[in-house]
Image 1 (cartoon, rainbow, N blue to C red):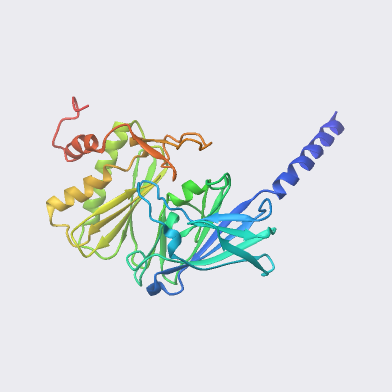
Image 2: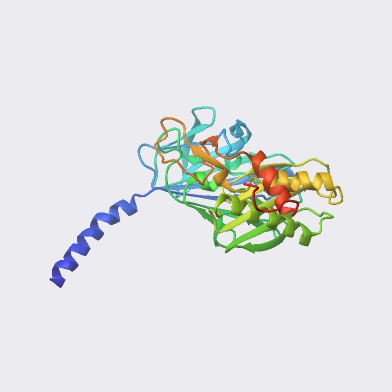
Length: 343
């Protein structure tokens, strides 16, 4: 009996090993050797490419932005080589697609991408996935399924903040491409992190640039708004959430929500302007929970609907408006209304 079990186990291993050996994987290395150039240097490594070669593409979309940005036009000096450093043909075959030929066990694609001085300068770098990281095309035009890693080679003394899971210093992982690009990465020597916990979830307020805000007050107000939203939505669908606050010299503010993070710009010296503070704080923090929108994929996309994930290809179907969140969460978080009877 034991002998039969051993033989069966060996047979299973022999069947599984070829599949494992042939599995495709993608990893990235991002560096910024000269931040003032606003050029990010990217190395994309593909292992186990199938077929005659590999198609890679730069997205024209961004999760949550509902607009096209055509980042491919900012790609420079793209080259490809095999694992031994021998050059491979890399030819642009579409608006944002390159074809690498021939196939090789290891394909390394090197390119630079211009992100602009607001996204990258001598004080910080914002790595926006869909404007920086190309994807291996699987079932065209969608990304190949599978986990990915990205390693950020930051300048000495710079810190890294992101909603992605860290697997090693400077290295982060994601279960698929949609998740990877739905988590911006902030890199800066001026990062200030203010954490707080709520119902077993870790929240991090990451502030880039100097400012005149009282971080204790900001953290308390943020916690109140988040607590109200979590109560309204019946719980948080994540174990960690990151607020990426980008301080500007102006008085405007803006924000883009992601899977377990949100990127918010704010006037860094406007803490004493109560009207601006309320608009900035509640206008953007009242959108942090992904269940506010149910995501539906376009026709033809074979992947299942993701209820709590802002898929990079998703079309939003509003379930509960942000106006309602503002109407209820703002006064309740400020203690202006009684809890009973609001909803």
